[in-house]
Image (cartoon, rainbow, N blue to C red):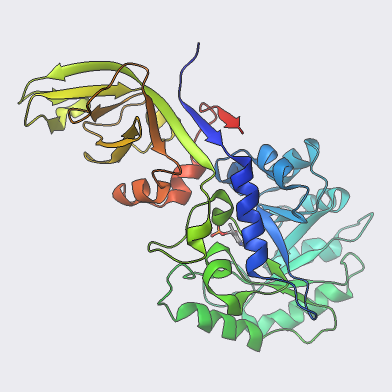
Length: 365
Ligand SMILES: *Cc1c(COP(=O)(O)O)cnc(C)c1O
């Protein structure tokens, strides 16, 4: 019927992972922590509208990188507040944000000015970013109090401002950097009555309970993959959401000494059976995948051989007892972690997932 290359998305697994993130920072008498689901970059490649729709009954808010991403969710029925993680890029966005109940990250002075100088029909909720050591976004800790005061005084701003920061190394469980960032954060918390706080990304939700505050911000873990490169007891409970699948479309045997694919970068050392699978870098399968990258054919690990083409890859299936045209192939999924494929390709699972193009149909189960 059609090209068998597709990404099967397990929405039950997604909800399981969200509930896990919530349960790791449980409510107490003093605190009712909440979980904002990160659905930027098309929900890490999983389909932002479908993911947000599936989480809408349990997620109180969503996070995206741009107002276009937020408007797309609104246009498709998502009613929750949506946080713009980089705030506004131009001042006209403040008006659109207020109209649409988008929350704004504010992390530099022009963004503060844009908020306080806007003419708004209703107030906006502000997340005020503090740079505690990542040095990418946020006010310097010593400038937080004055940024806070300016915003708090403004008629455009809701009373409850969320003070926030982001970790550079939370996925490194041996690093001192995360504790140092938390210390900076707590030391420079503005004196104010009504602030809330937010620190934890996936890695910190899973492994740094000191970072659990009023709002947790899980991204990668929602999609069921671990931010760590070693087993970790909480991360081990995650369920991968995507299974990236294709199928064998051609088979041949080649003789020892013959090569496969563009640039002939792999040469058979024995007579070999080569399966051609219809998935390539045009589908987001990484072109840098080296010879030997694992591919599952009929559930069995086989080595990629030869260069990844735009629409196809070639796999050495000599050791399979049976193989036929049409056999199911898995590039990554519950049985083959995307992290493992990413590691042999010199990247991270985040990148492989987020750069999957629209050409790959997402099938929701
Ligand atoms: C993307 C993002 C997150 C989520 O990070 P993960 O590592 O995917 O959990 C959290 N906070 C901010 C500010 C982000 O931009």
